[in-house]
Length: 231
Image 1: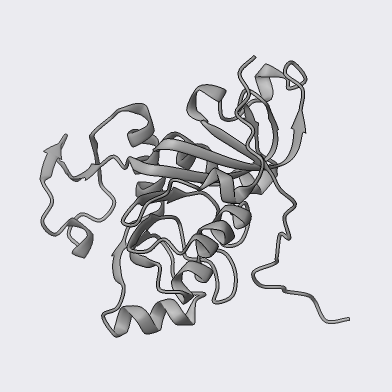
Image 2 (image 1 turned 90 degrees about the vertical axis):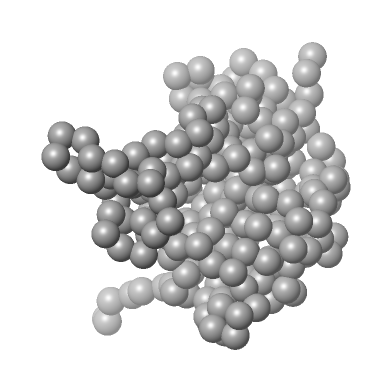
C-alpha cells in the first residue's frame, strides 16, 4: 500500500533547496505548518520566495524564517503584524509583492488546476495592475493575473490517512486547500493519522493525489492576538 508518511518534519523538508519557491497555507497563525517552518529554519536554506497570506509574527510562523534572513521575497496579502517584516522591507532587504487576498487564493487554486492565468477586476487602476495586461469584458476592465505554482507547498491539516487524503478543521482550512495543490511537491503536517478507509470521502478537503508527504507532528497553535471583554 502507498504510504506517504515520513518520520519527521526535518525529513519532510530534506530536499528543499536554496532559492526554492514555497506556497504556504495558513491565515495569521491559524492553520500554519509550524513544524515544517521550524524544520526549514534548522536546515538553514536561504533565498526563499514564499507565497502566503501573511508572514506570521516576529517570533512564530514564517516570521522565524524572516528573522534568520532566509526569505528573499514575500508574496502576500497582509503583513501588518510583523515589525521585522516592516524593517526589512523599508531597508530594502526584503522584496515584497502585495496581492489582493481573493486574487492570491485564486492564483494558488489556478496554479494547482493547471490554469496559467485569469482575469479579475480586483486591482484595476491601482499599483496592483502596473505592468499587467488589462482587458475589457462587457464594459468592465479586468487585469490578467498569473496562476502560482511553487516548487514545494506546505500545509497544516487536522487528519490524514497514509495515502495523503487531508481533512482541515474549521477556520484552519483557510488557504490550505489551495496551497496544497499549488506545489510540485506538497507536504502536509497533521495532528492525527488514521487508517485508510476511516475518512469519510465526502469530508476529504484535499485528495491524496495532490499530496506527496505527510508528517504527524504536535502543534502549539499559538494565538496571534488575544482579545477579551472587560469583566
